[in-house]
Length: 510
Image 1 (cartoon, rainbow, N blue to C red):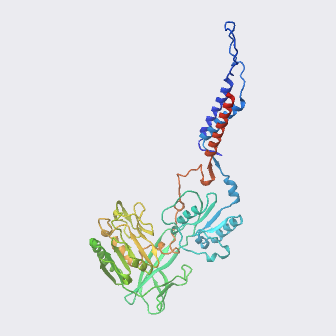
Image 2 (image 1 turned 30 degrees about the horizontal axis):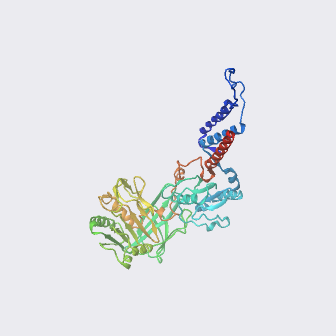
């Protein structure tokens, strides 16, 4: 039993009222007929000389009625014995899949063995929360996970009485989107899964005998890339350059891999195609020709640093049918939605950069944060549309709201830009970082590595940032279904007692 308004119990002092009434009440005297009052002598009242209780059952009923009303003012709730349910159900343990392959795997598995022996249910922190199979940990899938999204799903799946412990990774990639605001608390245990990685990000061959290699590196603090240009050999050989680990080159299939070493993953194999032209289309509405001019100027500047030939096509109408297959990049500058034919082509590798339309746009006094731009100056933002929240944020505004999002669809990308390439909307097209971003995009480096592979990005998140937000508005006195208000049964009891009191009082009069 718990009282939401314990001061209401002070109203129990009203129980002295029925007691006082019954003690001070005078019984009605008998009527005696006399011929004259002149011979009657007055006598003092004996009310206070002999205080005696009368009608004891009626007094107790009235005191019970006042006691029930006092309890109603104190607002009682009945709490289920959570300790008893917790002792019979030990709860769930959810483990991030990558922890089973981390450096401290043996220690984590030993801890999980102990918890399993104690009766806990072991599940993977993955979609559907499947059971953890100790007999075959090598088959644990390593799909891309979003711990915050899974925490929301878990809160809906389990009752508030089920204890939950989450064994989560400290890798930044596993925490994407908005931090959840949960109604219940989980026990979070953060383990390190960071292992420095070096990988082959991309390679490009051009001009018959030239080769460009992009190598990525990531640890707990940073993710960065380095580009290396060299002459392409005609036979199998070892490539080396300053700041680049030795690579083995296979010309027949255009493959690269790290030379076997304790430092690098010798199985990291990269196959790259021969140099081809990059085909870009600018599809626009007639009233947005100014945006096309800004894009054309920036593309010309970016083309000087791109090894491939850049072929730019402008059109004021959308390509029809299979014509979408003729392009690698589409800048969609139209008010209409993207055609279904283009969406199907994205699945096959097309990249679409769709800009905002006029509907739903609003003023926004902020700036765009471009974390992968070389300059420290961020372009200002004056107008935007609401974020779609359908993909990984690439750029954000000064308040952390996505401005450029990049959801992956099959082999391609569908960028959603909450602005336009227009000085009336933002300062992007006037910024020195604009051609640089186009160069990164056309070089297939616009999306950070952490959005391309869960195996590469090793940046670490702080413990405070990894925890969900606490819901400060939740009622601690009523923990979900475990607390039940007693107002209704008390009101029924009060009505019943009142009916009994009226019946006893009327019976006394008769």
